[in-house]
Image: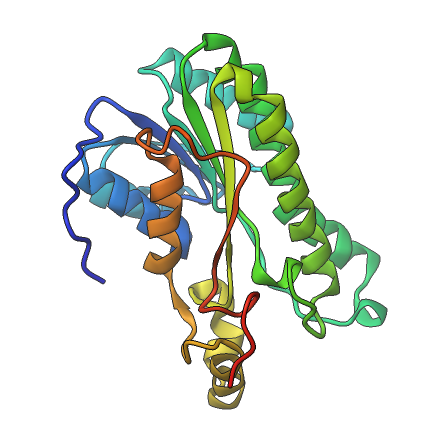
Length: 254
């Protein structure tokens, strides 16, 4: 999708994106790079990260976003090398199962991937960035399923509801340090993570009907919102969980 130019340059600002090679993370990277930002892309696959880096520049760091020490080291490196205006956690997973069919290992992986990684980033920013007395922003990714009850979403809804609570509490904790914390909560988005759903026309049509605006999301829909909350210009926005979901969580489709 096209990215209209912004009148406000981000030249001189550096951003860390965990999950920077994913569908949403890579699109966020493109949007920020188009405005002149310097990027650090974090993730587990060297090849995938380097493919995005070839488009947007910056540097990459191979890590497990669930590893507290590794995430803190990445944040500290960014602060030491050019400063850090914001960090986003775009790491996530989609597992749709009822609770009674979800194994303990699956539950632990869902919580680790979606909630632990978010906490690791907030923790690192709190330990490193908040001590610099310089404004910065954290952007997390939740889901509409944490707001509205959807069948077969128990584990992911539980993990992402934790992200919502983390967002609000951390925003309160770090407000005096000028560290803003916000989240966006998408509906179904057409990314590689959602391929099992989007590859089935029947499942895709069901998903379209669940969104009052009649379509599922694009990665750029979510990336635009993440870009907005990360932007230093949004200096009075914190503690928000913003629905980017075609109206799913707030409206009843006609």
